[in-house]
Image (cartoon, rainbow, N blue to C red; front, side):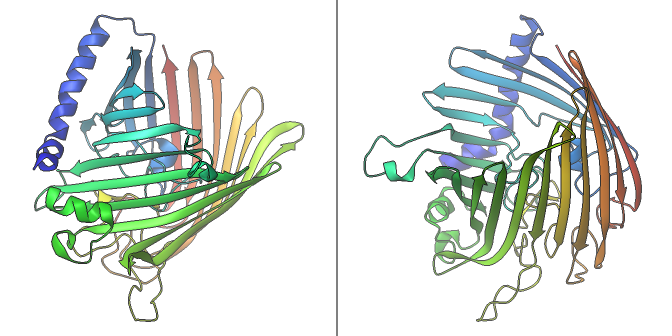
Length: 403
């Protein structure tokens, strides 16, 4: 009952917090204010990661400050394409030691990849949630657990009250990162969607969602690792869409590598990353095509966008990327090959038929004191007829001013 009541009123509580923050801003200086603007002639498949929002035209005003053990941030986003406003990015945190107890609509990228995640990326808008997290990697004091090495983690509980035809859907997530050996980090991940409130929450926490009150829940779990060797880093993530015998099943994968180097005396990072959300049948005939991010009751989306990899279910992408620090200007580029809806499913969220093609981009960014200006050219080589993404050249401009 308490979980139901608190989560259902979470947007209202956030509104009260935002009102308090507005009052605080009105009586203080604006030295922690940031203004951002972006515009593009069309969307591309990974617009949220590249452009910062699921919109061709947007503006954001944000403010951050602290007093005592409380940190807060206010973010107001004006979406010109969809003619809407949101408080995405707003938060309030209570600090105690190395921990934070917070409430807000904050972006999460749960992966060792700097670009995406199979389980929780920035492809969808952030779900309003309450959370507790440990940011710094520190060791357990107990000798019994010190072998785990430095660790951090986060647990949150959110609510999706706007995009469902039936009752509110609660969203639970947990991530643990630890470093058992120098240069090796490991992550354990879980997420779950459920509608049964407190009655289902116990089964979700224990992972028992195949029967009982939590039978309607949809959960995913996975593992990832990152290993640094010299100036190179290798990372992998694997996530299971379903549960079998108390363990994840119906797996899909992400793997990548990056190298820090010097090119003509300038710093550069070169990388390759492969994401594959295609799922095959198990020996028992379970899983199969369109398993990833799909569930009869709880599709893995928020506000219509999948919360994992941008290619959604039954996709594969291979991306080469590079970033170059040219002292006065930053350059980034990428070339990717994509397969979308490999099973040719008519119900796919991006395209109702199989499509394949290339996406290439070139971006520039320059800092002028407190003003940052940037631009990007992106060629999208295929249409996504269910997601307002068309073949062609996208030109985007970006500006940010810090006060």
